Length: 292
Image (cartoon, rainbow, N blue to C red; front, side, top):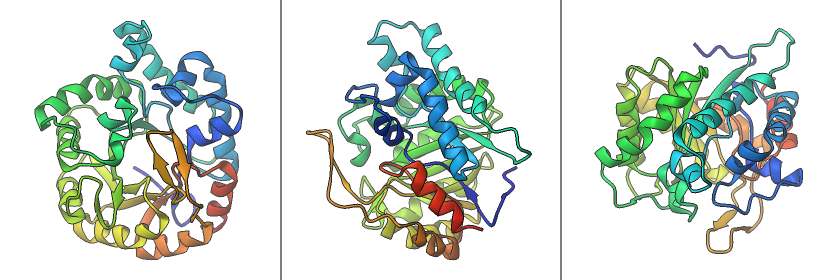
């Protein structure tokens, strides 16, 4: 289904990072989902910026959007469903009409993202697979109904959550990629990456598997392992390598991201590359240039 425009497909960078750079205040439990509610046109402009930079995949502003989160703002289930569908519509509206195939990936962030306390960088929420599946199901079904090209199950820190998500995919009618956030060669919850990738190996609805929101230097080894274990397209879109302090809501350290690193990701077997937190449209333009 996913046909490369160049040697690989280039996905976008940090949508929230670009929104903040354009003056949006995201110091809110809803994060970029607040902009989806209050200023949707700002999201369309960011999607356009990433497309103009050379990305061919837009990930929607639904990463931290949830029925519970919007309910806390007084929205009912129908209103929340409309906002989730709007996230897909905004990405579609940003696609240039120039004959190049673009894709919309509906972002499905982990349960921990909605807690807004940095849990996605730890995993292990105290919930089992059935509870996690029940929590994710309404959002997955609603996003699938909006007709994206695929679902981006991203920044998943834990095997149980990955298991819950892939169990929900059959019957949705939309393919997905499954992307783990990792540290020191393991999931954020400390599990072996080979076990994580194996979860996706025999699931036909999962068309790509890989890593995101990790340090750039972790990517080549993880990509090679994902390719070996699954035989599927591998996706890789790290963050800048800076650290996230959940208590202060700030990034710490220096950026370790360089577009030139993309060549090692591709050589390791990546078929979809991009950036996550702290990666802006200019970075994606440089990354896309490496893929020509």
